[in-house]
Image (tube, rainbow, N blue to C red; front, side, top):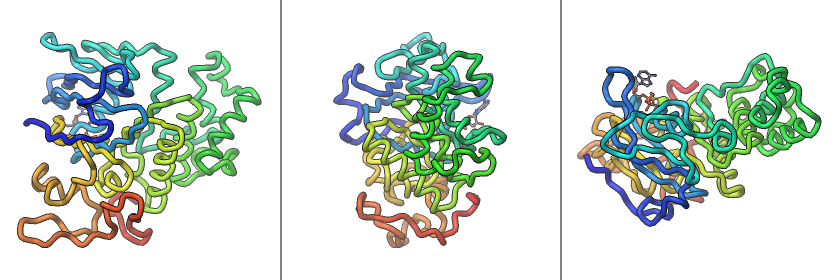
Length: 316
Ligand SMILES: Nc1ncnc2c1ncn2[C@@H]1O[C@H](COP(=O)(O)OP(=O)(O)OP(=O)(O)O)[C@@H](O)[C@H]1O
Ligand SMILES: [Mg+2]
C-alpha cells in the first residue's frame, strides 16, 4: 500500500540528507523465518521535530524504534541501499549496525514503557549511569561518579522536576517519577535525539500528561528531536505536529497529526482503529455522528487532555 503523506514543516520531501536528524531508507526487518515486521520503511525527521509514531499492537513501532537506536539490526537487502542515518552518520547499513560505539550512540537516547531503572540503586546513580559512555569503564561499573558528574545528574533531575527524589532508590519512585528519571538519564547522556517507546502506556493520565509536557518542553526549548510511539492518538494530536502511522510494518500515513480524525483512522486501520483511542470516546462508525471529544484536537495549544478521573483501561 502506498503511504499517504502530507507536507509538514519537517516532512521528508524538501529535506536534504545532511539536514535530517533521523533518516530511514528502505528498511526491512524479519525475525528468523517469521513474517516481515518492517516493510520498506522510509522516512526523514528534521532536527527539532517532535513526531508521533502510532499503530495497533504488533504493527512494528517498537521494532522500528529499536532499529533506529541500533539495538536491532535491519535486514540486508541486496537490491537496495537500506540504511539508517543519525545526523548524516551511519547507524545501520546493509544489515549491520555501524553506529560508532561512543559519539553517535550517545546522541540517541531511548526510553521505554518499563522505565528501565535499576531498582536498588539511588535515583542519582541511575541518572549518572547516562554518563557510562563518557567515564572510564571501571568507574561506571562501580557506580563511582565525581562531584561534577553528580551535579550534572542533579541538574538533569531538576530539569524534569524530581531533584528532591535524588537519594531514594529507583524502586521507591512512582511510575511517572521513574519515567522522568529515565528522561533525565538521557539528558546526562547528552542525547539530542530521543526515541520514546510508549513512554506513557503504564502511567495514569496525570502522570502521562506530565511526562509528555516534559518531552514537549525539551523539544521546544532544547531542540531535542523526538520520535515517540504512542498507543493513543489523542496524545499524538495534542503534542506532536506530525504523525507517522504504521500498519503491519508499513508506513500508511505521514503528515499532520490534526488530520487523524476517527473517520480517517477508521479508513487506515478498519476495526483496529478502536484501540487507538482513549476509552470513553465513541467508536468511529459509518453512520455515527462525530464522536464527542473530551478535548479539542485542533486547538493544539489550547486543548487539554482528559482529566485525571478518566479511566484508562489496562494502563494502571
Ligand atoms: N525479537 C523478536 N523476535 C521475533 N518476533 C518479534 C520480535 N520482536 C518483535 N517481533 C514481532 O514483530 C511484530 C511487531 O512487534 P513490535 O513489538 O515492533 O510491535 P508494536 O507495534 O511495538 O506493538 P505493541 O503496540 O504491542 O508494543 C510482532 O508480530 C512481534 O511478535
Ligand atoms: Mg511496542
